[in-house]
Image (cartoon, rainbow, N blue to C red; front, side, top):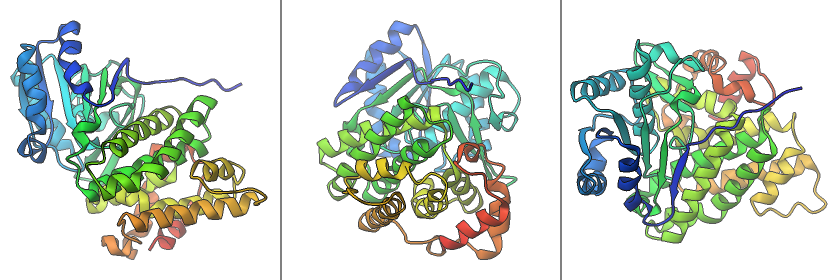
Length: 383
């Protein structure tokens, strides 16, 4: 009989204004000096200062590493690690979306386990927990502040490495929707579709449980109600807050149920062409779902209901088709590109992309295991 494990951060701060509590939480745990991992944009717009002001008030020291790329690299991890060691930091704070969180996880994991971040590609390769991480989220999408996943680009191979290890689960996750007001429309749309992909792939996963199902379905419901509103009006604090809960729930779902071929394939596009992860997911999602519909059609009924689709008297096959069309319509409404060609993907690269996708750990829990030729066909259908 198969057994399951459940992972999530020990402490999660949620709701409007919850950022103010983070200083006291850190102080209570006794940490003295942080490496803050972020990017230059978040420093420039003053979001990082909101955190450092709180740290100053709590008498917690820090240094700032702001070199994180949108698709964090092995070099980012190495450079951040040098700064951490050079300044004797005893914990890490990541500020941003998935990129700073994942970069921070890479730094923290190598700090305690040694070697290179490349050594930890795959599932549960580390022996020790990473350095304590406080993940302060500024987007409603990646779920990285909740999860045991870190995605790091290996520049030499042009591949995104999936590191899946409970040792990289953050100690504290912070989801304050007031920090998300700053998000531009395009990032709101892309990260929202990333969260939707997390929820749907988790619900279709071979490792899904009633706990992950409940989280995934509520995430889908919230995203279909509030993502468009958040994109259209970034100052809609209710929409921002509901999307923050949605992405957190989706993170809980996929952190424990796993993902599927949307992510396995999207990682290759991101690694090969340095494309935005959420956009790649959004473009691929309908096409992978068409592939999976043949295997688990009954699961699409519940997804359709969560999306607000009336499926009374509708066949499972038809419900699946309605789900796929609704996702395409939502993507179009919020400005997601319609196909891979628009993103600059080249047909001659597809076989390499497909071969690498089948090596990605995220594909292990897809409802059906594919051949290289089947993955090639899915890529082609997304053109």
